[in-house]
Length: 263
Image 1 (tube, rainbow, N blue to C red):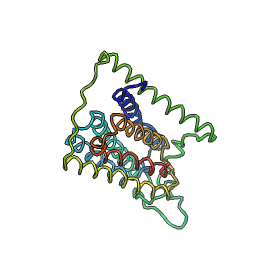
Image 2: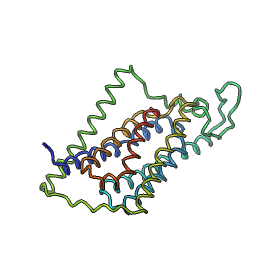
Image 3: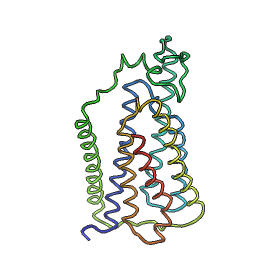
Image 4: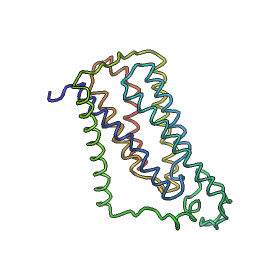
């Protein structure tokens, strides 16, 4: 084998960290440009936050890799940032003069925004001042996102190389994994929450046609979950290791499938 299992797991872990560090950035920028966070379902973010909380405590009880704990903490901070952004723009919009809605057959009361409110009515006043980022031809868009993914994965690889250089290639101590009911229960709860969070977002996308939603959010989520799951599998394929990480593997693997529908 060209790369030792622990080194391969570390490389994939760093790539996963790189993906998750930037995963929220495109959506935060999109929200800022539109001066609206209505592209995201509030329920999606809230359930995601609950899943991250369960994920963190489950990883602590199960003694999983430090990467899992660090990422869970970071996710929680980003979830709170997204929620703050959504409610801030709602509050900001409620203070503006009424704008005639552009929804045929009905009116949207001033300042009231729900999960079912079409974005064209909710942010009509803001679009003129903050136009939506230009969507280029499909080939150009694909090249842009592919380049971004390659750049982020390369950054993760460089981060791993720097970390190895700083530590002189010293083998890391991998904490002993414990298969106990508290950690496993929280792990499975987090997996169910992560999967359930996608349902309200997919439902919202049917109404908004993904208006205000950055595709990069789910592209980097897919890449982050892929490298994350592979980093766990690279350590070992033993029955005990797979059993200890089953909830996290199931959560990341099935989330990838649902994220494809959210794009």
